[in-house]
Structure formats: C-alpha cells, structure tokens
Image (cartoon, rainbow, N blue to C red; front, side, top):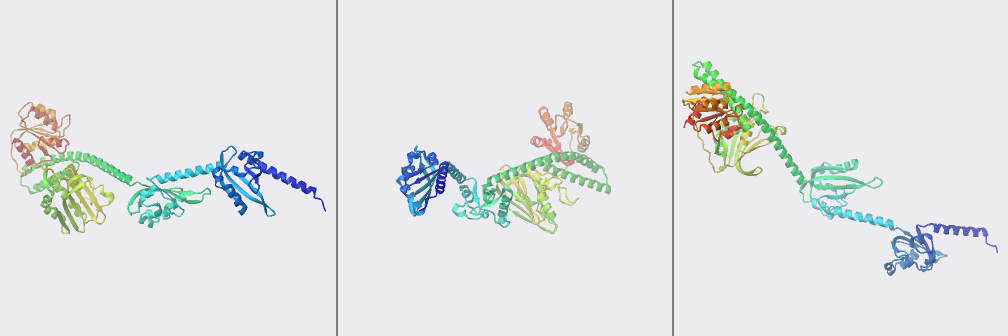
Length: 634
C-alpha cells in the first residue's frame, strides 16, 4: 500500500484556502452553504455585510430566517429547496429580511449539491439589488405617469407609429379629434387620416421619409375623421431611435386648428378689406381733387361757349365747331361726375325707387348698347323692396355694368340682369340684389382686385376710360351698399350690387324742362378763380342780372354792408379761413332774408350744405343757372 502524496495534499489545501479567500472577498454577494434541510453551514463576508449576521450568529440556523413572514407562511423556503433539488437550480427575485428587521430587494440563486449522486446540501448566492429595483420602479412609475399624461391629453392626438407607419399606441385626444377608439385604429396605417388626393400623391410616405432624414416633419393641412368630415390639422412627426441609432418608430402629434385657421382667414380678410378701404379713400381724395380743378376748367369753357353760341350768327362751320366743343365739354363733365361718384363726393339726389321697375324702364337703352350678337335677359322679381338711390347714378351704373359685360364677349353671348330680395348675415340686413352676369372671357385673379380703380382698364387704348366700374363702386357705396365680383376665366363674370332696403319715408322729386327765365336785380358773385368768375358773370348778365364780383368771403361780407345785393351766388371751395358754406352761415345770421345759391365742382362741405342751401353743380349751363335762381325767388 502506497502512502498519499504529501504534495497533492498541500496543493489541495492551498486550493481550498484560496477558494475560501475568494468567497470571503466577494463582499457584494452573500454566499452560504445549506445542508439538505436548509440549515446554514457556511457563511462568507458578503453575507455578513448584506444580511447583518456574523457567522457565529447564523451558522446552524434555518435559512428561512431571511424570508418575510408572508413568504414563510406561503411556504416559499421549502418550495425553493424542493425546486432546486428537482431541477438543479432555483432563481427568484423578491424581498428578504436583514438581522435588524429591514427588508431589501434581492436576487437569489440556489443550486443543489450532489456527491456520488447523493444530495449533500445547497449553494445559495444572494445579491442586494435594492438600488437597481428602486431605479426600475422609478422608471416604471415615470412611464406610468407619462402614459396617464398622454392618455389624459384631449387637445392633442398623441400616438406612436412603427417604422412602416402602422399605429401602435393611441390616446384620448386621438379618439376625440379623429373619432377612432383604440381598438379600431391600433394596427392600422396612419395614411387613413389623409385625404384621398394626399394619399394618391404619396404624402404619408413622404412625411415619414422627411422625418427620418431631417429629424422632424411639420405641416398644416386637411385631415379626415372617422365620420369622413375634414378638419385643418397641425402635424408634427419625430423619429424615435434606440441607443444604437436604429429607427424603432415615430412619435406623431396632431392638433385640430380649424377654428384658429378660420379666425386667421377672417382676420386676413378684414386686413385686406381695410387696406382696400384705405386705398379707395386715398384714390377718392385724389380723384375728388382732380375733378374739382377739372370742373372749374370745364366751367370756363362751358360758360364762354354759351356766350359764343348766342353771338355766332348763321355760319354753319362755326356752328359745327361750337357743337363739337359743347359735346367734348359734356363728355368731360360726365367723366368728372364719374370721378366724383367714385370718390363719394358727388352730390346725389336720393329717391325711393323700385329696382325692377327702374331696370325695365332702361331696357331699351341697354338693348341698344349690346348689339345684334348679344342677348339681354331680365330676371326681375315682381315685388322687389324699395331702395333709396340717385336714379341717374343707378341708371349710369347699370349701363356701365352691361357695357362691360358686352365688351367681355367679343364673339357674342348672353347678358343676364337679375333683381331679387335677399337677407344677408354679412353685411347684416335686408337688401335688394342686382346682378349682371355675362358668359364672356372672365377676369384673371390678379386683375379682379383692380377693376374698381379709376382709370384701370384692360381694353385697348381709346376703347375705355377706366371710369365705368369706378363709378359703379362709388355709387353703390354712396347708397350704403356693397358690390362684389365673381369670375372664372373662360366661363364669365357676375357683378352683384347689394342696396339696403329703404324705410317707409318717400323722397319727393320734380322734373324740370330746360328753359331759360330772365331775371333782375344784383347778384353778388363770390368766386376765387377769375376765369370761372368771368364765365359765370357773363351768364348772369345774359340772364338780366347785374353782377358784383369778389374773390373771397371776407370781401363778400364787406360788399354786403354796402346794400343793394339781391342774391348771393358763391363757390363753396375758396382759400382763406372761411369757405362758401361758412360764408352762407354768416350771411344767414346777419341777413336772414337774403337768398343764397352755392356752387361747387367738388366739396366735402357740400354734403352738409345741401341740407340748408341749394347747390348748383359745376359745370352748369345757362338754363340750369336760370332755374336755380328762379327757384330762389319763390
């Protein structure tokens, strides 16, 4: 029999000692040995640090002492040993108890130990994972709160997409805005929210591609709810990537901003209307000033022309020349009247009129202006409400609209004039709608906003003045109404006038035949323009009046102190601190019985003066001056 090798014994002892040192050095792990019944037979430094027991305190005690009361009552220690014995290993995470009674979160592994096929005990390794567990729980709680937050947001549709665009989560905002319950939409492709045209154009795929490439996709556009209705949406799509940079999906946020968009559109419309109003007001002031100066020039020409007519004799060539000059003067007066109407500074004679009756009365004039290739159709309601408007300005506006419609149909077509009663929300109230519709070439979008500007025309040179539609605009707004344009290239144009329904009052009008009545007495002519004064004085002389001329209001008041004045005939617009209306007021206060006749080519003061004094519009003819002076005498 050979003795054991002492070298092998020493090596084995060294190995056991080193292993023991290794176990004691593992302070982050509680490592212990259990006998087959679960009693502690070995204990390392890590076990002492984690569980609080010294080796002398715990060796020989059952390992169930480390379990909570509820786990012991549930038989968990026995289950652990039985499972380890049957399967070779048992793993679990759960709460364990230290010597001082505090609990800690642990990860436990129990391995069954066998020798020659016989169970000799168990190796048990425990690790304190309390901090990791708390961090995990904090993360889970944060995720739970985030889910609650996302689910509770109802003003935004917040949801996730997978990399292909399929919906993987859904919140209450998505259900409220888009109408789908989670069970209806999760798993569906997000392209179903897009309009058919956007789907056909590949917009959903393009949105994901941009988000993936640039890091974000933002847009506003129409989206579709479950019930098929549309809403205007603000959309943001962000790509979601893992720690390696791999795309794992997209976060999509959608907000219904339909009301905000409508408010923005309304604001922009109001801003455009304000800008248009300011532009029209500026143009009105400019054209009004031009008309005033031009009317004074026409007054000089017209006044002296009428003197020339009375003394030219029988020379036919001279008669034709005078007639041509007179025609040109009348044309110039018409143009300035259109300018004044556009600028809303024209004196008007409002009457209570029936629109349908008025349109029928000028049908012959309208027909004659259209030609053979254009058919005129009237669609007039039998009982349109009365409106208050200047009859001549209404007729002029209607003729201008019909002529414009004619010029838009060089190959012929149909012009339809309609009149009917309507109730509007914007502008609010009861109106009579008058529309002129043609089947012509239409108006380009970039031109529509300019058609009411004075002197703007798309017609060839010599074919239009550019004042026809500006007269329509001025007349309508002076009558308290509105005018709108609808046009489409190649299909035609519709211009609609809305005039407010009149009240119960009735305007009285009288018709006067052109006749000249001679007068007598002395007229005080107040006119700052010497040439206009000369022409007016000549007309007054022809009518039989003596004339005294002064150039300003102060001189007029001084002249009145000399007595011998029977009538005051004054321009409204004059230099100095006192205009014609103020002069008339001063005269009325001092000489209440003295007749006063005012005249103007344009004046804002004329609107106020018209309520107190008769006003003669420049350029006037001798019969108009005669009639105005004759009416003062009655």
